[in-house]
Image 1 (cartoon, rainbow over the protein chains, first blue to last red):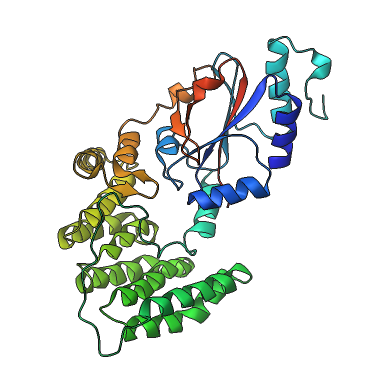
Image 2 (cartoon, one colour; image 1 turned 135 degrees about the vertical axis):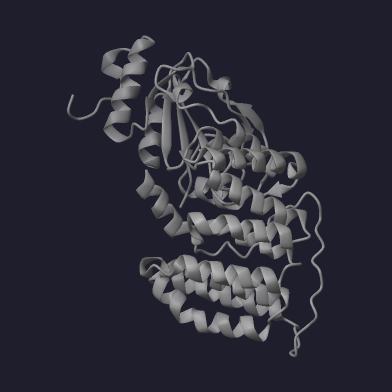
Length: 109
Length: 258
């Protein structure tokens, strides 16, 4: 998952960011993972475990869980990954005026 | 989703972390002295830790269940040799959480309940008993409540009482029974009011209880709704908010490296 996300963040950095909510057990573990996977984006550190305050408030019980949020702060897609994430992000980029030829697309389209 | 969560349990829970006592307690808790057993306890903690470390190494590259079975007699020997000391309890807690492997045989819950009951009786003044609450998955839905109530009643320590309330409140809040739901609410309110400042992992019981008492509704997390605000801090302690990124498309990613 990380390489795909990283390439999207790099390619569309003007319009797109990833915000993580990390549930790892301990800060050291998270710092190590970020180094190893070359993760450049920021994460909320959610209390050091899967039962952290943010995950509890959002009712998250499976990982990863993702929300794709548009530029106005509206929830637009949930749990889209891989090709579907490409399409969803492409749709939101087109909405803010990015040329269709320049947005990510899944293979089937 | 359920499968993912179960996989997560399998991967994480019987692992290496159970024996570490809550980090950074806000209120320093003194560990009461036990009367030493017949053997010298010098280096006892190291011996249990060493054994845990060699189990972790072996388990990392083998079948965890088989490796746990191979190590079981060695932990049992340490638990009995070091009985009534904190190190003995550490060995007992390793044995307790490794009852997980009896799950498929259908005996996990009863064995775990009996074991935990014995530990509450024998080690009631140890703060390590807070770990009993972390292993709530071992006792089954019906077993958890009497055990946590017994734990809270037996222990003189706030840290242990808070852990018991937390385990019970988080389990009962998902109950379909409305009496159990309101009981969970009472417990979580008590957790927040009485033990809110106590540390739980890298957060506080207060933060956890508040989140469980007022979760976002399912509707408010639906497509087409404004994303609820998140205020928090990154791993270095730098604060930020989800709305800092308004104007950009945001992939909000709940993740962990496991």
